[in-house]
Structures are given as structure tokens and as C-alpha cells.
Length: 376
Image 1 (cartoon, rainbow, N blue to C red):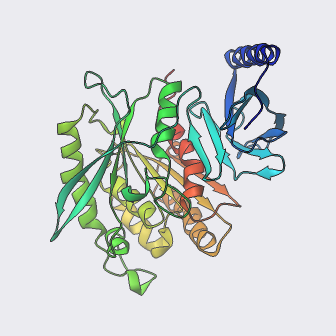
Image 2: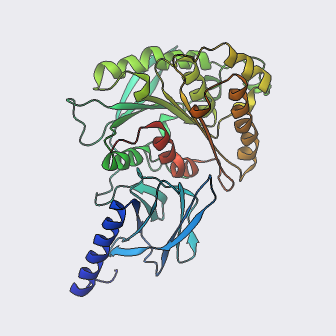
């Protein structure tokens, strides 16, 4: 049982919270941390992936409770984009930091996003089954708790829908995407729903690999990614636009995935720029095709009217991430080679990043920041 606050301590904490809010209005963004471990000291080290600037702040205790303590710190979200939390010497992975991120919860289940002053609950979602060739495919549809059909929502389409919401989806948890979107919605005027397409079958590698030329891995030859892309565009998107109150213009639709899902999301966005205005390719398997093949493929596209924003993220701390990193870097050069708009491509690298959901959960809010306009 954690200690109970006295009246005096409560007053002091309230005053600290007011100071924190004041700092936020003056340009700093307040980040909250929930800590299950009753740590004596919690620090936040804010960094910039561009300037390499760094600022370490001892976080202020906001409240104590039986289940967790809450801390806060404010930093310039225009200057910094990442943060590492240190709770009594136990450091987190590098986490996204921007003004769409309300907070991170340190627990035995890992580090998960949350919205300050809101109860944390497991996301509720609907499952719709659609015909897919000779079989069926589950579509996971998440809408915010306060979803209102009188308003319009953007849509984030994602591969590997089976790993997005359930905290027990993988050995490192889920993507935590619903929690991250809830956080964004609490801090901006942006509203969104999430649509995940199931890729849990043994056919995953094939359906998430496009066939754009000779593959560098003979086991991945003749991928059926084109069929999957058409399924998303011709079946899933029309269903969502018919049954949910969503925008239909590309600037309000994004497609995102990791690993094989990363290359397929990139492919889907490039095939259908009339529908997808942003692409999230996290730890993408671009290396399945050489640079010459990619340049030839991209040259055949016309991006004068619509050029999706491309966000690429990669780690470099296990063999698979290190291998994929080379393809991620090369893709930036390939896009330059075909005169893709420079302001539509961003690559972010985390040297200590691993190939798992824990890593992608930590960075997903950064994709949200690049994908959505900063409407307050």
C-alpha cells in the first residue's frame, strides 16, 4: 500500500500542477508519467533526433495512489521529439515526445501510452469479417469512446490488425494505437478511427509482399501484395466510408504497418495516392527488392497531383533491424532519384530499437504527429 498524502502535501502538489500548466501555456508541453513502482526519483531526458540537443529534468510528483504515482515535466515540443524516462535507474526505451503525447505509463506490462486524468481501459473494437479469396479476413475497427456520427473522422488503416489493440497480442504487447490516438484527440482538434486488417495467417509473408520485380529473397518471390492492396482499396475502404462518419479525401487517410506490413503499406500508398495521404513504414522490408527495381517501379508513378507523406522509422539493435535499416536508408535515396517531393519524406532512426511491438508502440505517436496537421 502506497503512502497516503497529507493535506499539506496535497496542497503543495496542486500548486506544482498549476505551475506545470502555466509552463505549458508559455510554450512548453507537459508530459505525464504514471509509475507503478513507487520510485524515489523519476527523471525525463528530452532529446532531439535532428539537433541532438538534450535536456534532463527531474519530474515533479503530481499525485500518489495505491496503484501508481503520477509525475510531470514540461519541455519544448518544438525543440525535442524523444524522451527517455529513468525511474530509480531503470530506463525506458526512447519514447516519442510531441504535443500529441499526454503521457507514458511505466508498468510490469511495459511502457504504454495514456491520457492524463483519464482512466486506462482496454480498447473496445468491432470485428467485421470480409471475403478474401477462398477464405475470410477479419477487420478490426476501433472508434473513440465518444464517437459521434454527427462529426467527421480521419481514418488510420493498418496492417497486422490482430496486434493493434489486445495488450496480450504478442510477447511485447500491442501497438497501443488506440491509446495514442485518444491522447492526440485530447490535445488537438484531430479526430480519428483505426481500421486494422488481420494478417495472422501462414500466408502473411506473401500477402504483405508486392510483386514489383525480382525479389532478393527467393522464398518471397511472387508475393500477392497486389491482391491485398486491391482488397484494402476496393473492399475495406468503401465499407468504412459507407458505415462510418469519416472523411474520404486523402489528407484524412493514412496507411501504416511494420516489417512486411511496412513495405506493403508503402506499396498501398504508392498504388493509391488518391486515397492515402500519409504512409507509415516502420522497420519496413524494403530490402526485398534492390534499388534499381524500386526506382523503376517509382518512376512509373505520377505524383504530381497526390504525393503521400512518407514516414520511415527503423531501429538498429538486433540483426533483423540492422538488415532492414539499409533498405530504409536506400528508400530515401530512391525517392530522391525519382524527384519525389523532399518535404514529403522523413526517416527517423533509433540505434537501440528492436524489431517488436514494444518498439513500434513507443514511436507510433511520432507517426501521428507527422500524419496529422497541428490543429489546436
